[in-house]
Length: 80
Image (cartoon, rainbow, N blue to C red):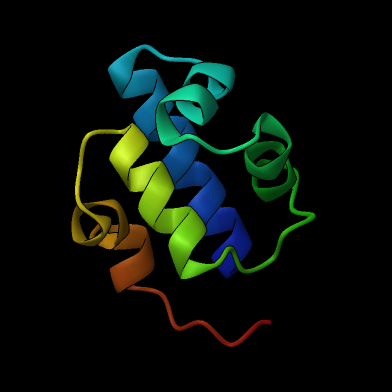
Protein backbone atom coordinates (compact mmCIF):
# COMPACT_ATOMS: atom_id res chain seq x y z
CA UNK A 1 0.00 0.00 0.00
CA UNK A 2 1.35 3.44 -0.88
CA UNK A 3 1.50 6.46 1.42
CA UNK A 4 -1.27 8.09 -0.62
CA UNK A 5 -3.52 5.03 -0.27
CA UNK A 6 -2.87 4.83 3.48
CA UNK A 7 -3.79 8.50 4.04
CA UNK A 8 -6.88 8.13 1.84
CA UNK A 9 -8.01 5.09 3.80
CA UNK A 10 -7.51 6.92 7.10
CA UNK A 11 -9.50 9.96 5.98
CA UNK A 12 -12.38 7.87 4.65
CA UNK A 13 -12.47 5.68 7.78
CA UNK A 14 -12.56 8.72 10.06
CA UNK A 15 -15.33 10.32 7.97
CA UNK A 16 -17.34 7.12 8.34
CA UNK A 17 -16.68 6.87 12.09
CA UNK A 18 -17.71 10.48 12.64
CA UNK A 19 -20.66 10.29 10.27
CA UNK A 20 -19.50 13.15 8.07
CA UNK A 21 -19.02 13.54 4.35
CA UNK A 22 -15.82 14.57 2.65
CA UNK A 23 -17.55 17.88 1.85
CA UNK A 24 -18.33 18.41 5.55
CA UNK A 25 -14.73 17.55 6.43
CA UNK A 26 -13.53 20.20 4.00
CA UNK A 27 -15.81 22.76 5.66
CA UNK A 28 -14.71 21.76 9.16
CA UNK A 29 -11.05 21.83 8.08
CA UNK A 30 -11.29 25.18 6.33
CA UNK A 31 -9.81 23.81 3.12
CA UNK A 32 -11.21 23.41 -0.35
CA UNK A 33 -13.14 20.24 -1.11
CA UNK A 34 -10.99 19.88 -4.24
CA UNK A 35 -7.92 19.58 -2.00
CA UNK A 36 -9.40 16.64 -0.12
CA UNK A 37 -10.77 15.17 -3.35
CA UNK A 38 -7.28 15.28 -4.87
CA UNK A 39 -5.89 13.41 -1.86
CA UNK A 40 -8.62 10.77 -2.01
CA UNK A 41 -8.33 10.32 -5.79
CA UNK A 42 -4.56 9.93 -5.51
CA UNK A 43 -3.79 13.10 -7.47
CA UNK A 44 -1.96 14.45 -4.43
CA UNK A 45 0.59 11.77 -3.57
CA UNK A 46 2.03 13.41 -0.48
CA UNK A 47 -0.22 15.98 1.23
CA UNK A 48 1.63 18.72 3.04
CA UNK A 49 1.91 19.00 6.79
CA UNK A 50 -0.27 22.12 6.88
CA UNK A 51 -3.03 20.32 4.94
CA UNK A 52 -2.85 17.26 7.20
CA UNK A 53 -2.91 19.52 10.26
CA UNK A 54 -6.06 21.27 9.04
CA UNK A 55 -7.69 17.92 8.25
CA UNK A 56 -6.88 16.69 11.76
CA UNK A 57 -8.50 19.83 13.18
CA UNK A 58 -11.57 19.15 11.06
CA UNK A 59 -11.80 15.76 12.75
CA UNK A 60 -11.33 17.37 16.17
CA UNK A 61 -8.04 15.60 16.80
CA UNK A 62 -4.37 16.40 16.87
CA UNK A 63 -2.08 15.80 13.94
CA UNK A 64 -0.40 13.11 16.02
CA UNK A 65 -3.74 11.33 16.46
CA UNK A 66 -4.47 11.56 12.74
CA UNK A 67 -1.15 9.96 11.84
CA UNK A 68 -0.99 7.40 14.66
CA UNK A 69 -2.67 4.31 13.26
CA UNK A 70 -1.44 0.79 12.44
CA UNK A 71 -1.40 0.98 8.63
CA UNK A 72 0.97 3.95 8.70
CA UNK A 73 3.02 2.83 11.69
CA UNK A 74 3.60 -0.68 10.36
CA UNK A 75 4.29 0.11 6.71
CA UNK A 76 7.66 0.72 5.15
CA UNK A 77 7.14 3.63 2.79
CA UNK A 78 9.34 3.36 -0.25
CA UNK A 79 7.17 5.09 -2.83
CA UNK A 80 7.04 8.78 -3.64
